[in-house]
Length: 225
Ligand code: PRT
Ligand code: ZN
Image 1: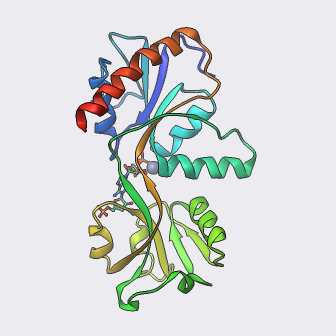
Image 2: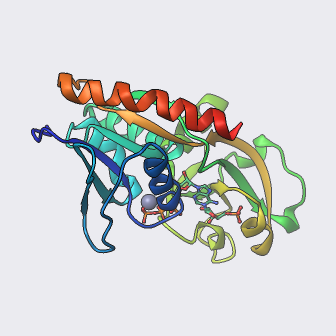
């Protein structure tokens, strides 16, 4: 558990969500002394520490109470939750808010030369993905027997490299799929960044600080509408 009396927030260190997370904290009035290489940044005007880590670690840090809050893509949250549930490890968090950045969709894709395909084509096929839990659950729901190949990067080259028949990857503009000669199919998850809280957080001072920040967050989100 986070025994420090400072509210600890986990954000992505370097990547697509980093700048938006830093901008959001600024808009909430949290002043940070961010030094590039530091794991922890201390706020200079509020009892808040910001932990900068890989996005994949954020759900677990919040679920285990190492951090009180975290900002992470729903795609990563759902994947980690499913994995931990299967392992019988605590996997619940309180979702405080959806955020207005990090939008993407997790979608199936296959080589263009195959042309249009429906879901039944995936029967017996091998699908490369970074999200094996979400994909396996979807395949089960759809009654499709297909195998998954876990790749943490370069998923889009898997069919060309002969590693898989198809892929299931995050898409935003679709340019990566197109550049790799892939057709986008069914979306199996839509995702935004979200703010999560440890579900057992009871420290009154920290809860009061969160209650002070939440109306500001709502204000920031409304201003964007
Ligand atoms: O190092 P670390 O583990 O922290 O970072 P990471 O490399 O795992 O993640 P990162 O920084 O790439 O993405 C962080 C989060 O941003 C993701 O978990 C999503 O919630 C969100 N996000 C939004 C995206 C995209 N859009 C996105 N387009 N994450 C990845 N992509 C990739 C996708 O995997 C594919 O390679 O971008 C490519 C497709 O983009 P388009 O525009 O060509 O379709
Ligand atoms: Zn990651």
